[in-house]
Length: 415
Image 1 (cartoon, one colour):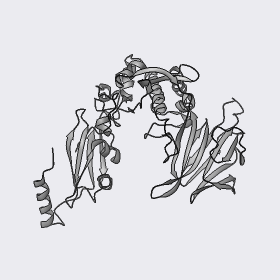
Image 2: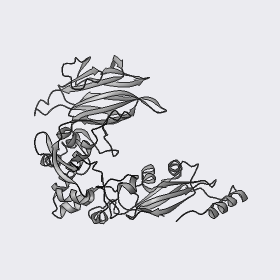
Image 3: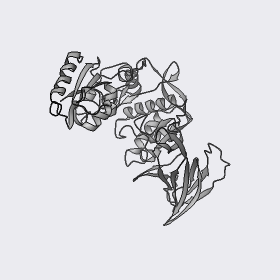
Image 4: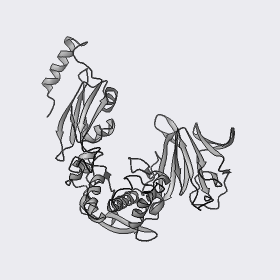
């Protein structure tokens, strides 16, 4: 359905007759839908349902990524994961009694001979503060704080093991009030100039894909069936390898630790009570040697293995979602996403979007009404148009609207 010129003329006339009372601006608008995420590629809920019904990981992946092959590829490369984005302040501290946190000026890479500028015991921490284009590092011990130095880039490594069980030490990164522990690799803190706002610090964890990175992927519950976990491990490895080509300047990274790429939660995934070992076992089951693992490929290259929580009963294509053709993102039936037993949270949902969020999404002063213009063959909203109180219109792709308003999916209706 299209908004006619005649309708806009009438709408504008109504405003001119009585602009104060012609249109009521709603506080919010309500939506009802199904599924969660962009819907492209592997449906995680679908994988869970298939695994519960006895299907193996390779079969699951071949179903959702049409025309691909699963082969063994080298996966011991390092990947740079952004774990702190656009920050003004952060704190790094050893998470293990008796361990040492070594701090270096610059990005030291894999140079093992470099000398640290500070060696902090587990009772001390280092506070990073963005000051202009540089980052100042302060050693904090009790109530005392000492300036270590100021530089555009810092690196941190840690060493030691827990006294009782010999488990490798961890380091804790605190951003605002949230702390996350990391066990592997090293951490870099870099000052990067961001558009409009100026310099901000980007924090990355450089780890090996084969195990250090994959052990920290927090995409699905570790209590899920083994074959669903293995399918996720293979998809996550494939996605990581596909992103190695370019270091993104905006985040000083190959991938973010969030849904922008895939969730990376540090050491908490593998040490999770009861279920943590199940996820590690799935990663190991998808490995083929100490330095290789199973990868979804097309023409012998890793695919960008998109995955989604669930769909509206039919997976989406990359063309519909983002306007980009990917031959392996065919739309296939995904009935488990519509099963309230398998997908209790998102087989159906309702959500209210505030006026301010709607206006910002459409770049309008306000939004008084919305119209779904068309749908894709998969059932997702193809385009949606907003009208403001001054008669202006703005049209977005359904997936763009979903992303900007944080709706669970593009399978939705207006209430």
